[in-house]
Image 1 (tube, one colour):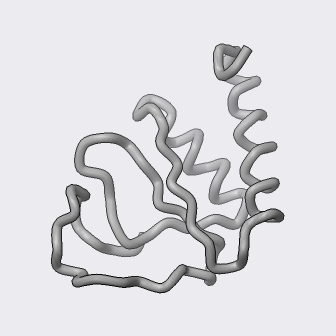
Image 2: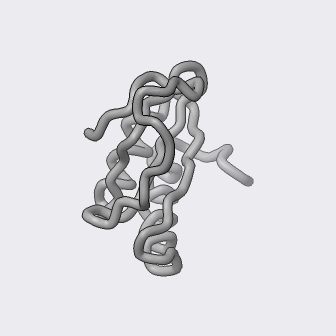
Length: 92
């Protein structure tokens, strides 16, 4: 079935997945969550409900969240003014 499911089921799937990530991740780990732009709100809401925050950069071409547990941001390496193909380096 993968992600070929009704929108309500898919939202429920997202709300079930991200709390599991929060349990198994190291406290200062980060995850990259690539998603279709048409579902960005659904992914963001589910991640927020599971106590994820996102920061450091915004996508420039392909939608992606660089996410971490709230108040547990991983260490930041490199020049914050360097463009790595992403749009800016900022917190949300």
